[in-house]
Amino acid sequence: MKSKDNLQATASRDQIPDSELILNPDGSIFHLRLQPSQLADTVLLVGDPGRVKSVSRHFSKIECEVSNREFITHTGIYKGTRISVLSTGIGTDNIDIVVNELDALVNIDLKNRVPFEKHRSLNLIRLGTSGSLQADIDTDSFLVSSHGLGMDGLLNYYGNLDKINENKVSEAFIRHTGWNKQLAFPYIVKASDHLLELLGKGHKTGITATAPGFYGPQGRVLRIPLAVPGLNESFTSFEHEGLRITNFEMETSALYGLSKHLGHEACTMCAIIANRLAGKYSKDYKVTVDQMIELVLSRLTMGC
Image 1 (spheres, one colour):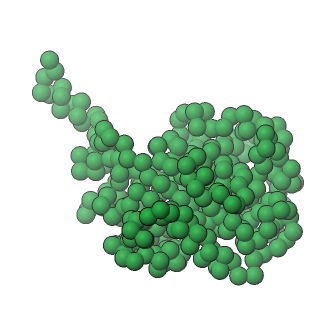
Image 2 (spheres, helix red, strand yellow; image 1 turned 30 degrees about the vertical axis):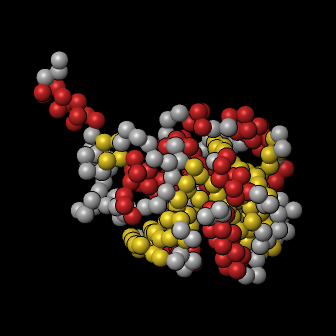
Image 3 (spheres, one colour; image 1 turned 30 degrees about the horizontal axis):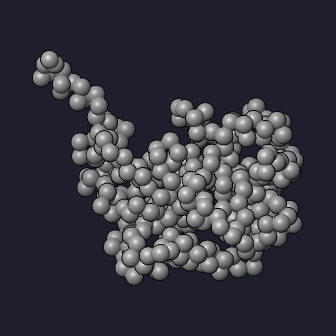
């Protein structure tokens, strides 16, 4: 039998230290400033904080509004379904904060700093904007990401990448592009099958390349030359067992990878606001984004 001191030592080791799981004085999670009760099982993620109201204006009731830095959350009711909408800001570094803190809210006892025995899975759906890398994917259309291609390197900091990575697709991509070894290892993670089927019906799907920047990493040249010229062209020409790289954005790979690690369902739908091949840009992308929001809300509540 363990002594009382040993039991206390074991409990202490199992607790997540204050420095690793940071809470605010009111007990809310550090960056998002949310309490567990303020989060729905379905969370719509938008980059732009201003887009949160574009979603929540459709709610019949808003239960709470929480704001901290670029992270704004509204939780409310749409056609009888409880939904949260949260702004992430731009980039996979922000997604790292958002997904880890959302998971902590539902899968860690914040008071006692230990994980719950029973796991709770969230539906995390990103509503984004994106640039097409294929001629047949025009501006003002919708695209659902079947996979996220991580050029950002974030998932390389977490263990067991080989268990969630589509290894054969990554290997084919590295061979096709002659991937520069100075760049981060390009991981590829699949979307939630359930959400992909729900949101992808009637729309094009494909691999979404997630870049760690807007300019050089996406092949844009202003005043600094590119280290890897022609990368975009090699993305467009890539094909593996019917999969192709369809578009560029800056969040999906981390969303898919972290969600897969943590046991959450994740999917991205993007409004295509530019076609990089044709040099075209949407004349009024905000109309397209509003249509995408209405479409996703409708599909999430079908049968309600």
